[in-house]
Image (cartoon, rainbow, N blue to C red):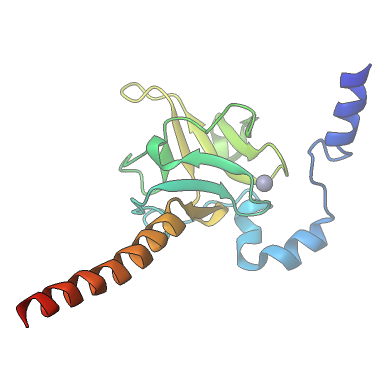
Length: 169
Ligand SMILES: [Zn+2]
C-alpha cells in the first residue's frame, strides 16, 4: 500500500512527476519549446552540444533531470549528440513512435515527459540514444575543484618566488 501511495504522489495526472500546463512550458522554454514539448527535431550538425567533449553530465533542458554522462557520449556521425546509455534506465522513458512514416522509439524525460530524441538499435553500435542538443543542458564537472586548486597554487607560487629572490639577494 505504501508503494502505491508513493506512486500516486510522484506521478501526477500527466503520468510524470512534473506536470505543467503547456502555456507555462511555452513561456519557460521559449525557443526550446518546439523540441521539448512539440517533439521537434533540430537540423543535424547545428546543436551546440554536438562537439562538446567536456567532462560532466547532460540534463533535461526542461526540468534539469540528470540523463547522460559524458563518458557515454560518442561521435555517431549523424549530426546529433549520441550516447550509448543513459545514467540509469529510470531517468528516461521510451515510447513507440510511428510518426513521419517510420517506426522509431521516442526518448522522453522520465521526470517531466519532455521529448529528448530517439533510441536506435544499430548493427555496429547496439544501442544509440540520438538526442537533440536543444533538449539538453550541460553541467560540467570538477569546475569548482579546478578553480580551488588554481587559487591554492597562486599564493604558493608567490611564496616560492619570494623565497628564491631572498636567497639570491
Ligand atoms: Zn525533464
